[in-house]
Each structure stands twice: as C-alpha cells, then as structure tokens.
Image (cartoon, rainbow over the protein chains, first blue to last red):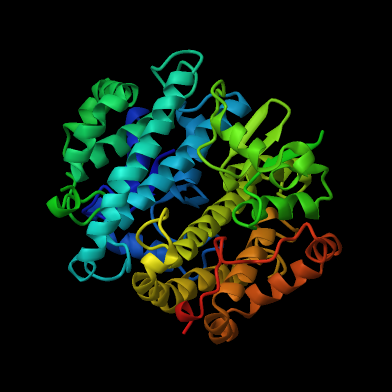
Length: 240
Length: 240
C-alpha cells in the first residue's frame, strides 16, 4: 500500500510531522502536493473541495490510504503509529504517546501565532507590532514551560531519557525533533539561552537527526528548508 | 470504578467537555477540584506538581482511573469513548470521531485567544484593543469556516444529520453542543447572524441539550454557569 500525503507545497508546515514518520519507517508514500505527476497543488485543493467526500478534511495535512482519509496531524500519527512500528503496542503507552503529540500540536499552534497573533489571513507586516509582544511572551514563558515539561518527561521515563515513551522510538520522538528544529530556526537566541535547561530534549533531538533514515531524508531534496511561509519563521525582531 | 476528574474549580473550561461525556453516560465520577472533601483546588495542584509522576500532565483537565492518568481533552475522550459507549466500535469511525474532536479543540483554542490574543498570563484589559481585532476575524472568518464545516459534516453523514458520526451519539456530538453553547454565550450577535447557515448544527445542539441525562445535568448545580474567567467569555465589545 502506498500512502498518499496531501499537503501544501513549498513549506514543511504541519505536513512535516507526518513526513518524518513515513521517512523514518521507510514507508512508500507519495507527497502529492510536491509531485506534479500526481497533480501537485491542484490535487490537494481538489481533495479539500471534493463535494462527495463523506469525511471532508478541515485542512491539510491529509493522509489517504486506500479508502481511508484522515486529517489532523495527531490523528494521522495515531493511525500510522502501529502500521509503521512507531508506537508501543501497550494501550496506555500508546495513549501517553498520543498525549505527548497533542501537546506538541499545542506548542506548534502557539509558535505559529507568534507571527500571526491577530489574523491568520492577513500579512505579517500588518500585525508585526503585536507579533513582537506575543513572541516575547512565547520566548520567555511558553517555550520554557513547554520544553521544560518535555525535559521532565524524559527525566521521569523509567527506562531512561533516550526516548519519550519507554525504551523505543515513537512518532512523538520524531515530532519533538521537528519542534526543536523549528524553534531553533525561528528563535535561535531564545533556544541558545534555554539550552542548558533542556539537555535531554536537545540530546534526543540530536540523536533523532543522526538516525540513518532521518539523516538521509534531511540531506535529500525531499526535506524542504524552513522559510517565512511556514509555521516556524525567522523574523529577527521576534527573537530579539 | 469511579473516575476522578481534575480541573480548576469555578469555570466550565476544557473540563466541561469531559464532564458532559461522564454525565451523559451516567458514569460515577468525582469532580475533584469542586469537591472540598476530595481536596478541591489543592488536590488539583498537587496532582500537577507530583514529583514522582511518570506521566506528568502538562495542564488540566486530567482524568484518573486507577493507575491511569491522562490529560488533553481529546485523549481523555478517546479513552473514555468505548468505556462509556460514546464512540463506534469500528476503527475508522472512531478515528473520524477523534478527528472531529481535534477540530473542536482547535476552535476552542481560537475562541480563547479572542480575549487573550497576546499573553495568556496577562489581564484582558491589557490586550483589549488587540482582542477586538482578533475577535472580529474570529467572528467574521473563523466561526463561519469552522461551523460551516461541521454543518457539511452533518449534511454528508450517509446515515443522516442526527449525529456527527453514523446513526448514534458520540462524544463529538456532546462537544459540538458545548461549542455551540459557548459561542452563543460569548458571541450572541455573531451566532444569531450565522444561525441560518448552520441549521443542522443548531438542531443537533438542541437535541443534545434535551437528552434526559444532559437536561438533568444542565439544570443541576454541577453545571457551572459560563463566566468571564473561562474559555468562552462575553465581552460585548468583542461581539459588536
């Protein structure tokens, strides 16, 4: 079965959390939005607009596997987890993995809102002053709180700090890597300052990036660079 | 087994989505934060601060069932769903239910940010001007988009518009009811204006409120009123 991922081309965005799971597992997938032969952006739009869809996606990313159509990053990863070997079999461990993923989704939404605090549909330059204020709160209060929580999760893992859940890789580890990479891109100064408080988080992120499939993906053209159209944007005034 | 819900007393907040599921199912539960005999607010804080917790919650609501501790509304409801008979057995239907719940969580976060667009830890009066701007975007663009999507989900349900998923009640129906109630409290003018575009959503919400267990709960002192400390706040200037 070849998975089909529908996401906007040109940005990592929320689609990247799904890509990382597919890439780490070596799964066969088509990144429809980036593949002109598959229809590219128009195919993404057509999926969203399909009048006959019984389970219409609210927004990308959307994963299609045969007849199954699922949106929402956390739901997609929960679906893919057992199929890709990226979550524990134990139900409580799987629920904990999902809870971690939902909290990553919350940070990601707040990271996005640093550059769009008032209107997601308007330009950054029209809400820049407010963005400066929201970004300061995010850097000074929210980033330490969220990342400090992930540090404590690693500290408390009875099987050690190599992974968020138990002693094996899960999709939550991959997403935490992406969160760290994104925050480093958007807020390099804030992340530098925070570094000594979250050594286990940074160690985990470093190890994830060195895994064979991850390293190959990150070095490939399939990994799009961060940019100022995505979730994690580097505007120096928001990291001052 | 008696479920234990840990949530801040004094507000419906995100805890209400869990309460509605427990109440509809007639489940035995303790609302710890509101029950002084159970420790009240201090017990909620103690759970959050417990140094030995292996699965530390990031924030309430938290559900405890024996040794299981789970936070994040969508994860709690996913856990409770099969236990309370509030989700279909079919895996794809359950995933769709969860996806709907995750989208409700997204609207709820945006509804919260209408009154706290810049700093969740600061007073409303210190971000009121920005709140007016963000609330206008929410009323004019986001509410129609989200509620219109739920309307289309009901329209496309092959088994009819009585429920979001299939022909039976699910926790997503209960949460949609709470979303509608909250938006009506916070933005009565906007909801009035939007009403004719979302008849099926409003019908569903009306029927949910009339269910025997729901009606009994809503009329009981266990249902706290909406207020200006919760997620859905009525500030007339945000609904002008």
